[in-house]
Image (cartoon, rainbow, N blue to C red; front, side):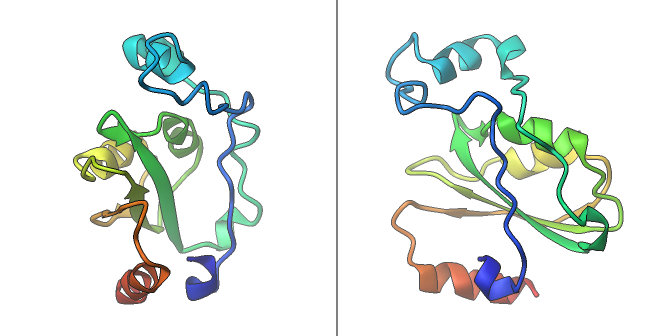
Length: 139
């Protein structure tokens, strides 16, 4: 996506990285399952929320996986920490089976401003060509 838009990438990284065992939603004792069951655990600390040169961006694409029908909760921390005022925000998500649902509008509610557009869901098997075509339609 960054190649198509000419933009730069910023990785939203939890301070404590999720392992594959942590992400095993079929295990009731996995980290994401515990966080799912207890919303107080969803305040995930990030390595940083400060995007270099944030003030120069007028359009921001925000990509995230869907967890239990919502944006992965580390996204909440990032969105709350940044000022999206004066920016166009274009959300997109990846999911094996869940739809976009209200994930983008829920992030917009947490955000400090911004013109949040309708989001787009991509399956894990989506072709790069289809993603690039969608990105071009956004400009």
